[in-house]
Amino acid sequence: MQIFVDSIEDYLTQVPEERKAAFKKLFETISENLPEGFQQEITYGMIGWNIPLETYPAGYHCTPNTPLPFMNLASQKNFIAIYHMGIYADPELLNWFVGEYPKYSAKKLDMGKSCIRFKKPSDIPFDLIAELCQKMTPQKWISLYEKLYKK
Image (cartoon, rainbow, N blue to C red; front, top):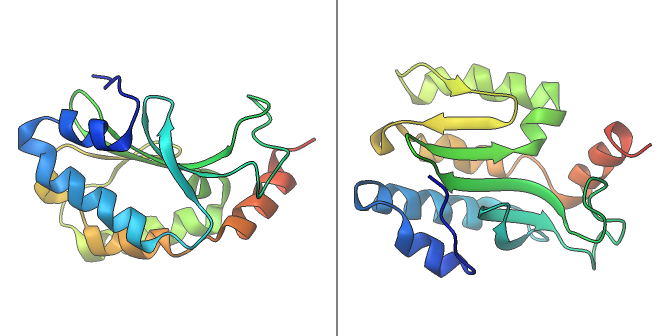
């Protein structure tokens, strides 16, 4: 289920009612805990946090002249998803997250390469997500991105 909107406010109003409170809390948790320098906007049909072109003029190599993506939040058909490029790119961060997750949740971690999925809103470990958000600054993400993906 993709939500087609032009603003974050519109996206938040379109989230299904049974997910709305948890989704909004997750949005606020991410927004309040990401270090200064990330920009919020609708990207790829989701709420996104990017490195703006003013900070990183080279932008995203896959789509020139667009901000460098870092994190997205989406209400999908069967789950709420967080897409975190730092987890995808940094094995140390991934290992930290996987190791910490059982301390915050009795549920099995449902995760892809950069995607963390929550089927039930009540299963979201907000404190762990807050801590994850604090782990990577825009400058650290740019450095990692350039090291791994810019050729």
